[in-house]
Image: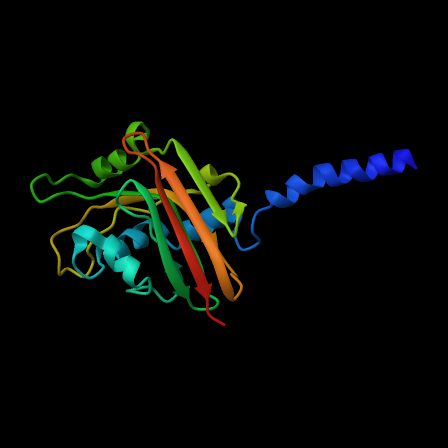
Amino acid sequence: MNLLRLALFTISLFSAPIEVFAQSNSVLRPEEAVKFASEANIPARYWQWVMNLPPPLDDEDQIIDTDCSVNQPRDVWFLAGHVRVGPKQRFCRIPKGRIVIVPVYANADYPRRDSPLPCENIRARVLDTSTSTPVKLHAEVDGKDVRDVAKYRVQATSCFDMFPDGTTYKGAPAFASGYWLVLKNLTPGSHKIKFSNLGIVYGPKETTYDVVVDL
């Protein structure tokens, strides 16, 4: 009997952490997410979405804070990071069945009016590990940590135009890279999505979304 109790105790002791750190079923594994994000060219499309939000472009946080549905594409739903160091809390209502894209860390660059650069220079600047690689990455969905966040890195398939509608000043060639979670089949109801990064040249940025998926 004592041996049986010891066995049961050992099972309960070591099985609990497995449940605590289990990954949410809605989060695609790294290889699946990278494949999807690459084929859908998510890095380029994310930055085109952010940079083409309604004015004021110099503070897109205010727009996204007010209405996360602005200019969302039909096939995916972008969550957004934020510009300033520190925490950011947001609420977002998402249609049922939409694939959710989480930018744990997103980096992009494009030529300025006074300093045009070729594609290869812009790409090299974005991928420069001395400045663009985050020191720390973290993400969780509904209280469960996402494992191996560093394996979710994806870069744009090619250089692109940051302002493809042609109404803003020239934004080509642009390039983008980052770490992108892909969430499928989020169940209707409430969810909490949290992600953060710490860069080499900037302090920690943490974004928390209280999400409601429509019935």
